[in-house]
Length: 341
Ligand code: AMP
Ligand code: MG
Image (cartoon, rainbow, N blue to C red):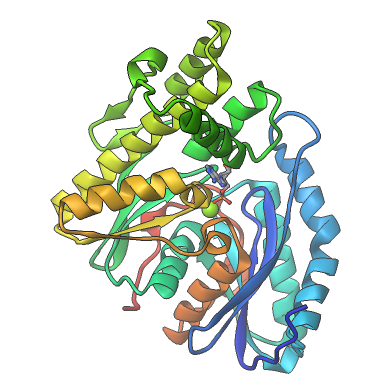
């Protein structure tokens, strides 16, 4: 139990995909841990309707546990923020419906936020970096983003599936349940510690960059082919991480070079991985830049990051009229106007 009393907070609701999460941030920017529930499919991938049903089922208990743990009363809440997009429509609609109801019940402003921008703002809040290139590596998204004027511009991105989705699919093909990324990291580490003279040529995989963009379907198929040819699972996990992460880091490095920025911020669930963190650090060191990442609980999807962006928007006098609060599953990172520092 956390049991601490906080005042004057923004509550955030995250529901873009596999996670329903409530979090809060005080008006001075102090974040507090979220209450989250992850939908784990019994078999196969994430079915949007089933994930949405999970979110509806757990919502009341999750919110009560947040309110109880922080001894929070409605009169301490200044605004309710929710992920308006991008994400899975049925899942987004659960979060939006909860937020609209709470806005009316608590009589506080509603703020619809851009989930991708929230990853940037919680990273800035947590690490103290000010004007970073963000390498956003999550289940559904893979983007390299940097601020230009009043927008966070997407400089490069995946043209097919997100890197986390690729890792989860490869894991699932080996019988490893969702989320597969953490298990792939363990298998890769174990294999490398027993094979210190490992050579990437022995587990060759494609390395796919088109200009500033990436794709991951080809490497997913190729990794499965290596398994079918009899390669050890640990070796393929290691090679998969090395190739996929190196491609992301290459695009991030070019983004640093093009923009002249000197900070790299990692965000999204795949940013929990120690190898991609290590690669970021090496690349940044070599070019006189600095790599940052928030704690793991703020890398994965969480309600606190939604609250943090909601706080910045409310403090910039931005809120969302209920009639404007419908969700947008294909909301782009660069569609949101940024008016705060
Ligand atoms: P998000 O969509 O941002 O909540 O992140 C979830 C994604 O992060 C899933 O695809 C996970 O497999 C992936 N993930 C979480 N931890 C790790 C890790 N240690 N290494 C690689 N991927 C990870
Ligand atoms: Mg995310």
